Length: 124
Picture 1 (cartoon, rainbow, N blue to C red):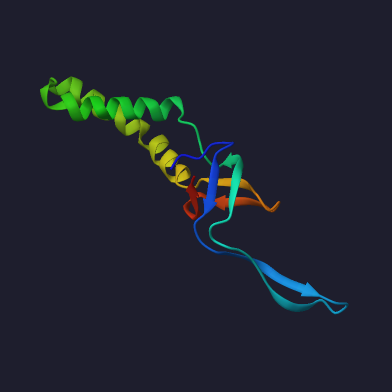
Picture 2: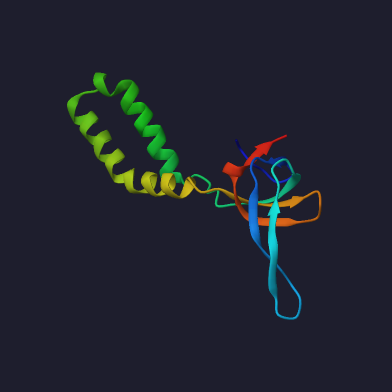
């Protein structure tokens, strides 16, 4: 699922927020939760990294190698393999960082939940 600002979402599972306290001695009287099914609007998408030039170049060269590498002269294929290898660290870093996408959601009841993982949200 691709999340973007303004998209309507539904909470897919219950989320425990924290302890509810009351009184002068701040005694715990319950647990505050957001229940599955609550709906809201994505206000901001965090953690989603745009592809750099190196990442796009890696993808392009890798596709070229996979599709045509077997037909290339040895020297050209080796040069292409070297270019792909040089871009591998940028590709690995992008994949690692790209796994984490968090968002800020304003729920219809007024609560705001920041840095929520996209895995607990369902699109409407």
